[in-house]
Length: 152
Image 1: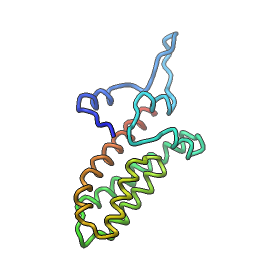
Image 2: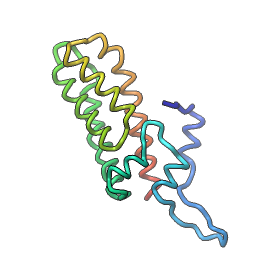
Image 3: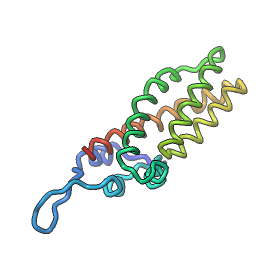
């Protein structure tokens, strides 16, 4: 994953998702045009579009659903304890499956590793990687929200 510095992240959010053609008219960019200009390291948008039959509206709906459902899961997974690893494993599985739907493969792999660790009661692994997982997931959510805003 490529992390942006604060300055780069700020610049990323200040750009506009419109372009002017040769006569000065402004037109809205397509999903892939926006994604190519502002790529998200965790997300394979081309594969996501294919998964949704090349329907950008359907893929955007899946991205919105991911944001809406993943935030509460992350909040519930914030402080894993040995006694709650069973519930944590279920929540990690839900995040993993949501990531697969939108083609956020790197994050889905990490969620799967956390799910397996929680199911095997490896609390040390869960504690070691939960913060990193949250960091990556929240960055992905923020980037998806920005991408969706640019498409409106």
